[in-house]
Amino acid sequence: MPKGLPRPRFQKTVGSFLLGTEYVNLVARDGDGGELYTAAQGGHPARIKIGLDDDWDDVAGTLLHEAMEFVMIRMELGYRPRTDWAGDNGATTFLMTHTQFSEAI
Image (cartoon, rainbow, N blue to C red):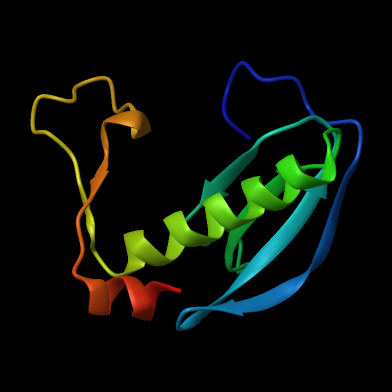
């Protein structure tokens, strides 16, 4: 959990699912939005956490967003400017061919 954020009141691992070429734990939590942890910790695979306190279309959209981001990072399709000293993930640009996009999906 990133520093400064309150601990979720509800958090449950839904399961471990094959995403691209590796397994990722899907975690449901309270709140909205989602986050992606690409580094395995404590013997567990990478994780995607999704908040369930939102409309279904937003929850599904968040899950798709985080899953696609995970696969594109693993395919090394993300680029960040060298001067991104703040480490803002919003600065990442994903660049791919149509074939790579098909592989990512």
